[in-house]
Image 1: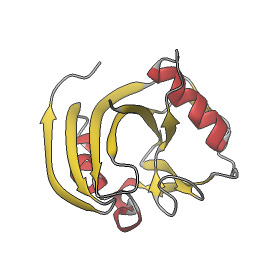
Image 2: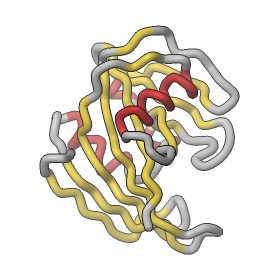
Image 3: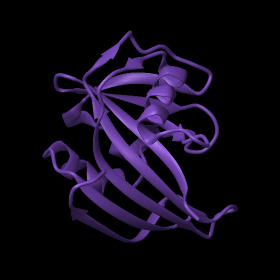
Image 4: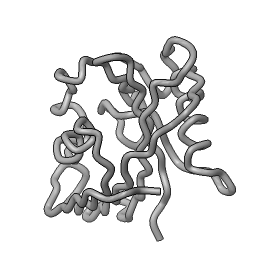
Length: 156
């Protein structure tokens, strides 16, 4: 059974807020703000909670743009992550560094693909074009994608 996670990408004009993961799963990589959905929690509420906990940001309206599944093989704890992905330009507060995340604004044209999850290169163009989609990625370890599929579709 897949674990459900969320990611939220905050937008400010031509900039996107990413968090540098300082510990735990994904350490050393830039990513959206997010994490595990807690039992009984809606995915949108999870995305808002994670943004608050990780960077001190209060997020309002969210737009879900994707659901991707990442299937990790040949790792210590293999499994599937179902990631609900959101964006928002409706937020209050300036991002602050926490024990887990160092937030930083990037120009969209300067997205740090070389220091992000490898699947970002594949789905990010769909996102920037305003598309909604589902994706699935099969990983060998955490760094090598062996196959993937992205389908433009409505997401709920």
